[in-house]
Length: 360
Ligand SMILES: *Cc1c(COP(=O)(O)O)cnc(C)c1O
Image (cartoon, rainbow, N blue to C red; front, top):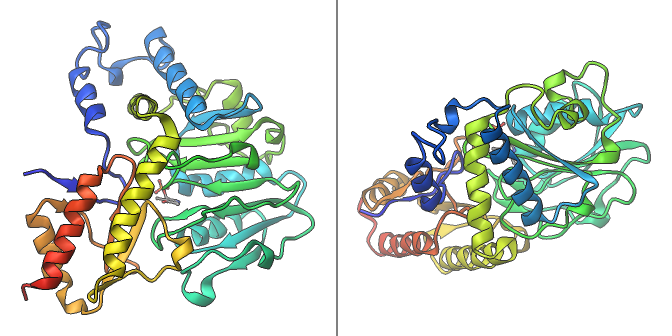
């Protein structure tokens, strides 16, 4: 049976990448070693890390005025690491609160700084992105933080906020590499790898070089961006195997035509699924249409007593991990880059079939 994995993360990876990893598991390119067994300072692994960084730079058109760091700690770690690295002499950070992951980053930042909520969509259960004109930015903020794709709520920025001279910082964990992004509009872009990039354990940080001298003295060396930049992300042992897999995902994306090509596919996949939900009497997605995420599609059954039967039938058809986040219930289909449109079509077919005949 063909299986389609809709997990929000750790999530589906391209089959081709996993097959290559399997073939190279015991002997990487005639080295006689698995990548897991290599010194991070050996020429073999350095070549893997350098290629991964170069390919990521090509994919996202990252300029020379940005550092690309391969770190550990995940996005929740980075929620604390970002303020430590960017606060400098400032006291305040502006946040736009669009849901659960915004709230997590606010919670961490409060340990180091005064937080100003410049805008929030809490008034409508986080079902939209507040218009830029409504944001109340502070004049002296160290930076403005946004979560550009709320993985749990399924809310995504379809536009890039203009915040003037203040650095814009974005948690892009769950949609990085899913669409074209103008990196030059951001001071920092960060994200955990396990949604759309590779295995858990790797955290991507893309930081403009002129922001590297603002770290608080208490910043741990392993999380100090400038020290890590000066050590090519090898101040501590980097997550070597995760970098290797991510590097193959970058190659996979480049081979398909890069981010413009994958964005087209992602638009088509999201349309297929949202159109099916909108056409149905049983299912609904509550997010404002223009702010719907192309990556994470939460939906509910109007009759919640059918949830169990729905999930059971999905599992039997090889449609895996559709259960919604424990905080919101319902269902969630994550349709990252590595989910083929055939998987979305199989889900849509099942949605229709179950609506016609919901086996109680
Ligand atoms: C998953 C996720 C996180 C948390 O990532 P961890 O790797 O568990 O720290 C943070 N932000 C967003 C947007 C996410 O999707």
